[in-house]
Image 1 (cartoon, rainbow, N blue to C red):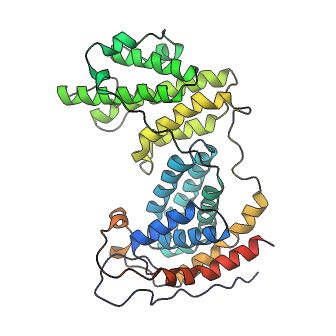
Image 2: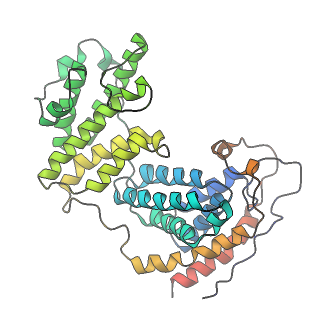
Image 3: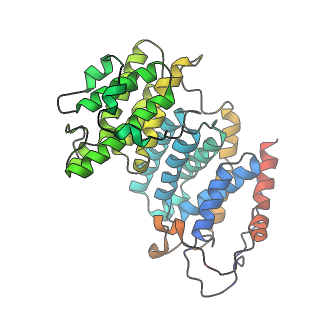
Length: 372
């Protein structure tokens, strides 16, 4: 089916000496990235068209790694418990893209039909997934940092998970916090469980600062990295939450094996999601605390209408073709993470109407096609 698209205007910006980094289509990089995120958070065919257009532009400007990082960020911070299955999907999608990157030249990668479909389908799914952002970290009052406070409030009995994970190389405070955390999860008190992790992180940081050494644990639970990374207190909680999950799974109270495994992998080894380690722990706590109380304790399908999704994906190639019609950026002008936050100048901003006019044909074509 032929889809009519408006040509991208090349005179959206006033000619000047502006040397701020731009995408392949000519947008300022921060503007394009912001427009992509805004469209991603909206629904409807018009929003989908904009999200696909800007995703294609970012990727074809050399920003594939930036785009993948943004996918993880959006899934962790926006989708969250709405559908943890998205993390398994992203893992498989990224693996497919990495395989293509390993064998294709850059322009060949951008023009590859499988690559385009994977990117487009991911954008659609991020839009379609129910959203349930992570619970915010509870505040830790200064009074909780006084000597002896923990022993005065810790009252939960030893748990099987604590016996499994805690060792002689872990501190006594970590043992007490571990039992309190397990009890909070068992009672479905997510905020209380998160409080104990937050308290432990703060205490660990205080000890490391004072001793210039390790914090609440000396046990190396990671085989790579510096001593500080190998003894990160987060690794203790990661192991504890995996153990708690296994206990719940044995009782058939939760069925998210792949999802938990993938979240643990992201925490330990994936640099593209590494900046969200604490957010990943929040999500794992929430799964262990809340999912056992669901009527069906498993992640639902990513889409309720696979046929509609497949039809939408067939339109993605047109968006990439439009972007690829522009000249490729030289290597030194391709997207880098620091370009996403280029300070605004006092120069006149691009006319928003020009961008909107530019996308009108995309919106109409997508809406017309999807409503057939």
